[in-house]
Amino acid sequence: MPNPSDRQPAPAAVIVMGVSGCGKSTLGALLAEALGCPFLEGDAFHAPEAVAKMRGGQPLTDADRWPWLDRLAEAAAESLARHGVAVAACSALRGIYRERLRARIGGQVQFVLLDAAREQLLARMANRPGHFMPTSLLDSQLATLERPSPAESTLMLHCDLPPGTACATVLAHLGRPAVRA
Image 1 (cartoon, rainbow, N blue to C red):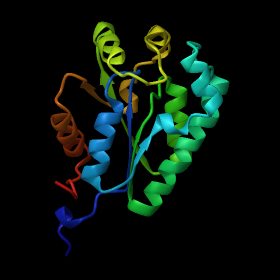
Image 2: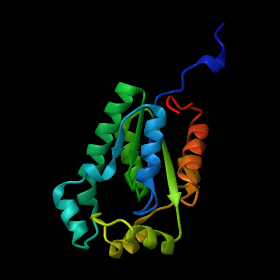
Image 3: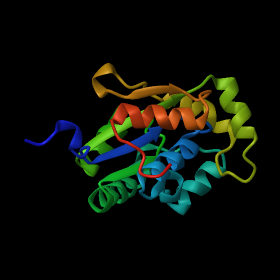
Image 4: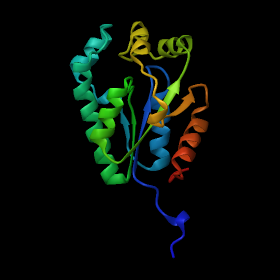
């Protein structure tokens, strides 16, 4: 009879979410490295027009976001099929965006919300020279953010956690050992 601890974890997509400046990319890259899969940087899936809009200080609309979410979901589903795991960074600010990602990715999707105070986020954003997201858009992101409901089973972490500790916390939550130390 097989030992239950010998079972492979179910394929899972991990979406590190939150507003700009919370550390999604840092944690996502660490998780992808630990799990041995590509890291899907959500910013790379934005259309050039959307990046130009944000760079100009205009918040995105749902119409701007749907194609972006679909491109990211397609890449995550492909990683899930190829590697048995996917890791992406995506603001996923509204519940309906998270629902769309879950539906389009398929399989098990775990969201991890990195939370922080507005002042901390502003300081982090100000220290990212060359990033297209201006600090002037933070308030619109915070206003758009719909905190996940308990039914969403989102893991919530504060962005003050050291990145290595946050990564270990997510891995333990998923019940997945790191494939790379």
